Length: 367
Image (cartoon, rainbow, N blue to C red; front, side, top):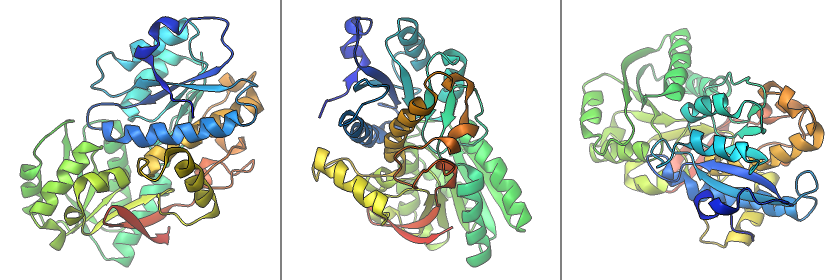
């Protein structure tokens, strides 16, 4: 297994030519609130690289990963790093697993100079040429889950809590409209800055409402901090929690006692019992061993991002810059979530509802 390099470790060699590899800038948060996702993201991308390099790589060249810190808290802004790398021809493409605020900033920097695959769940609507968003969107992920909670579980009063940036706000705008259609009420809404170390005050405020459920759109460590405070206050006896972004890393960090009545909806969970996931799990643990970082939707998305990039370049090596996210259904690539024959792209992957069960999610139903 070729270990991916951090950009700071090989800075003096990035412009060396001739270069025989197809070099991907893997943008992942390596510090801050979202930093707990990094090990799973790196490990999953490595599986894709190993698989591609067993054949013809990308564009007939072996694939190489360069890790770049895309956290808001990174010492050097990722926009500055990416612009420099593109300027000197040091990367051939970007695969990014980071928050939407970073993607929006980078879209003004990349400007179709290299293909940019954006992998996590997001708010939808990214149609910039040369950017390919392949993650779950609220209409497929959030909407059906809210229908289940409001119709099947008769939950009518909601508190909305998220970090203060585009994805939580956009998702909650969608949720507000959806809940209104189902005659459900929003009794609390709050957006928090990143990195709050104590959420007990926020939990106490929610306790003063008549909420039956919390729609949680906090990121990474912030979600963990909230879950710990929520569990310590015994709030699970009064209301459920539902999040589209809490994954298995967050379960591990939150602690089992703080996860009662916590639900998630996603097109991927590590426990997913499908032939595609069984094959992926086998490759993943064969490479990384049984103590590998936990499998989860955000980590696995980098595997699909690298594979999607390979499919994109196989089909559109010369005209990728004229394509966008609306073209994803026409790209054939190796997916864990769905078969992805041409015409069955990321937007057709099944969405599942799951409930936290210790450090894993127990899948309840397909939405």
